[in-house]
Image 1 (cartoon, helix red, strand yellow):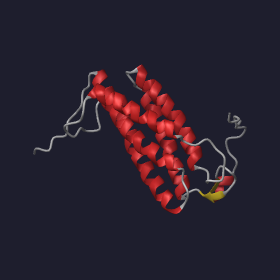
Image 2 (cartoon, rainbow, N blue to C red):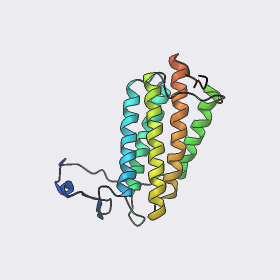
Image 3 (cartoon, rainbow, N blue to C red):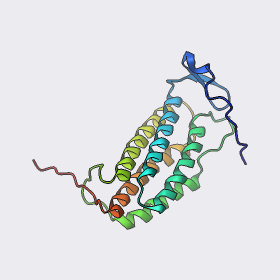
Image 4 (cartoon, rainbow, N blue to C red):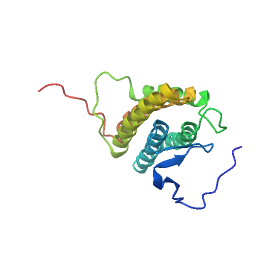
Length: 186
């Protein structure tokens, strides 16, 4: 069990010089690749919070709540070096994402055409979350070329973008919005 940390003060003034402290105490620049990567994960978590506002499905609400907790773990994972003991994304979370994707693909059917990232409020927000997730994935790849990252972090983010895509499709289906197909004809 990880001990809960109490936040007693919101500002520290430490970051005023452009630096931050990683989990474990190492000081790094706020624009480092590691900070960029976990910053995108934080943004993704916030967008998922926005998607929760307009959801139709209680099942998707439950899934997104689990994802938000995973993203906190992933943020800690990315904010720490290999020798720091923090919760890390485990293989079972990747397996859960894959199983959930497979389940919802059965609900929405296989994709035969390109769809636009649109539809209901929740689906559109999930599409935004998917694109932020892909950006985070690119940042994690870049970071992994220079520094250690937990191998499961990259795999989880890759699966998560697919899961967000399928959940957006599902939300459009159950909201009655349906999918909006790309029109390549002029």
